[in-house]
Image 1 (tube, rainbow, N blue to C red):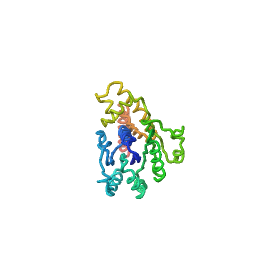
Image 2: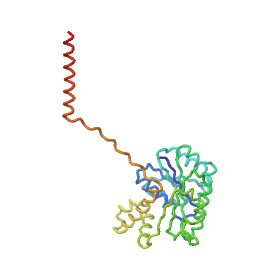
Image 3: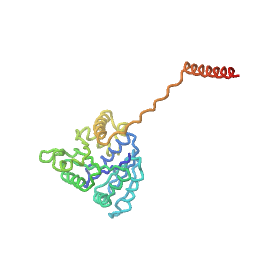
Image 4: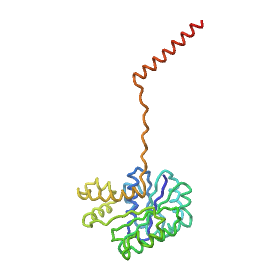
Length: 282
């Protein structure tokens, strides 16, 4: 199924490229035809992953919006009718890309061509909580209802709570709850163990599988990465779906010797009856 995933958030440094990489890993592991695009003009983090063959599209050139590159991105998505496209977008091009998608009714156009569109806003704890909540509110308010939304709660920088309320109990979520297809939570693990393992994996631009198979990670580090991968992939299974495996076509039973013999005998008997009938007429 053709589908486009846009990772969007106006605040920088909140884990957008991590989310894009996680989506790409999950789709790739489920054997979904995949195209990855990095549109971040400042930090080419997503492009650094060797596992995905990421394409670079420069939406901003010398701090100027290049409208033709936006068109090129839409054409790339539209042309690939049997693939899922994961687009990582930087904070500096967040407003131009969001405005382009809304003003040009690009999402409706893609859906008319048979592509579903999923917006992936990232919400974080800590100092960026209010900014990322505001970004989610803006996306949910501006984008058409036909665009699905998967919210990523990144607890790496701290718990996502406001006035004692978790995200699901906040007014901003309840206002847009009907827009949200699902929520994926990136838990905050022990920073001395899980945290260092993940940090090393991200710095090396490795996928979970690459890190688990790498000699640079020791036994317990690999085990912890497996725990994190399992938690995240199970959530993505529910939210993004897992393609159904094709059922094998049942083979026709081969003819047995007895069956073949019976068929031959029946044919010979029919031949004899025909011969006898011809003789009688004569």
